Amino acid sequence: MKKALFDELVDSLEQAAAHARGETVPGLVVHVPSEIDVGADNGMDLSEFKIGGEFLCGPGRWRCTDIGTRVVVAIRVDEAQISSKEVGEPVVTRTLTGAEAEAIGWFDGPPYGVLEYVFDEDDRTVCRPA
Image 1 (cartoon, rainbow, N blue to C red):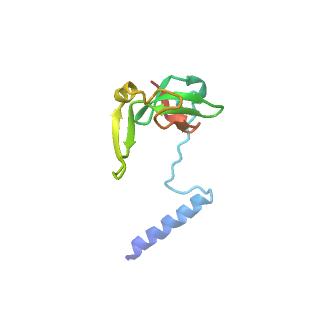
Image 2 (cartoon, rainbow, N blue to C red):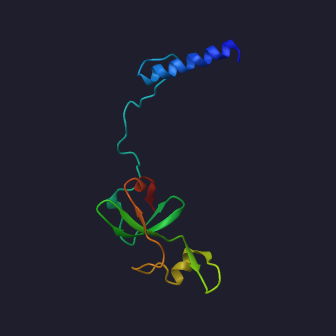
Image 3 (cartoon, rainbow, N blue to C red):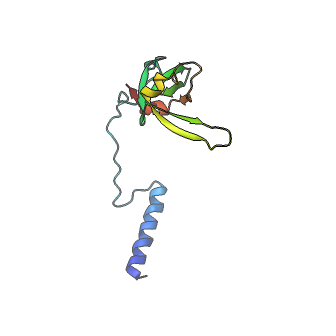
């Protein structure tokens, strides 16, 4: 390794160590917002969910089936994966559209014919009204 490159690497490591100790190092720029908007869109608040109401989260559309003190329980209603198994045969899984699953009663409940998922306060930060 050439001496100049070696010296540059050593200098960089020394700067990193200094930064870790809280010291000011050359070339480091810290951007701090002048104010934090606590009213910014941070997903959905627990009070925005209604049993039977729908919301969007990630790639799917969800229907709220229960609301707890800190969590929301919901089923995915834009699609449904169903599996079947005949004796001596492998498990067969297929995906139904939301309309197909609704028509044959997979979303009727409780109990529901599809999995219910729990959304906690962290999950709700990426949910939005439908």
